[in-house]
Image 1 (cartoon, rainbow, N blue to C red):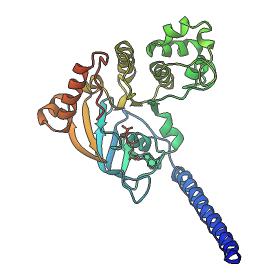
Image 2: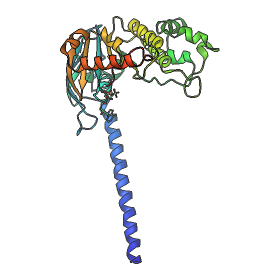
Image 3: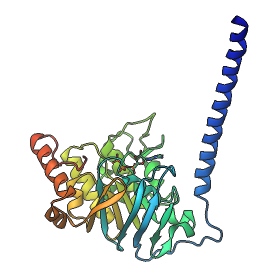
Image 4: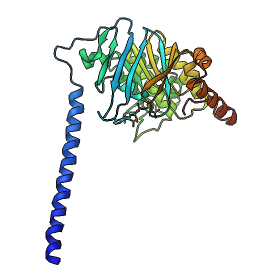
Length: 306
Ligand code: ATP
């Protein structure tokens, strides 16, 4: 038996090694696939932005071909208007913003900006025209000045400070002992979620994009921070085509259109008033959040999270 155990053990070892190698190869091909997916098309032109109308036409997408995430999404954000996307966790909201930025290509349908297919233009020109304010901004281990100026490294000091003022973070920065030279990030000053988001807003103001993608924080912010972020977002999004992944009622109320996403499909669309009248998903979400807000006095602004 002992004589048999040794070779069997060895075979087991070989089997595990081969299996691991196959998994590694699979991972490698996945990485190559992702890399290939974001190559510029041959002869790709520069995106020519006029008003920046954003259109999703019957968009199909899955990170894995076996599991569709977006199942035929269509919407249009007219130039300078604001679209709010709401829906439960995992519905595909962030996926929409990743596709607009072309981190991935669609499996079907198309996305256009001012009529130009985003897969046919250079990624550099596409990404230049879009400013993203993510939920959780990663700050560089550098001065707060550098972190804002990153939006447009050629900006002057006056422009950086003007952007910080618009994002309502200038006074906070001046209150720090080292002002704009304060080092932030992992090994420096830890900023709160709201402060980080305002740094990201300032960065975006400097970049001056035609399209703004705003991924609202899901966590509850105190009401003052909430109002300040809201006010700076309103200033920044003026005259820009804005897509916001919204978790707060205050954001959706004034959106030109709201789409409600469930499991990769648009189940309702309309304005806040129109959707309340439909007495469907949205009206239910609104009602539920109002109840949560009433119960918890601390959360000044209810969130739209399910
Ligand atoms: P939340 O409100 O929780 O942020 P969401 O509506 O933004 O959710 P998405 O992030 O768009 O949801 O994710 C949609 C689905 O796609 C989820 O089921 C998620 O597990 C899956 N998914 C997201 N990113 C990836 C990825 N990189 N690879 C594989 N699957 C992913």
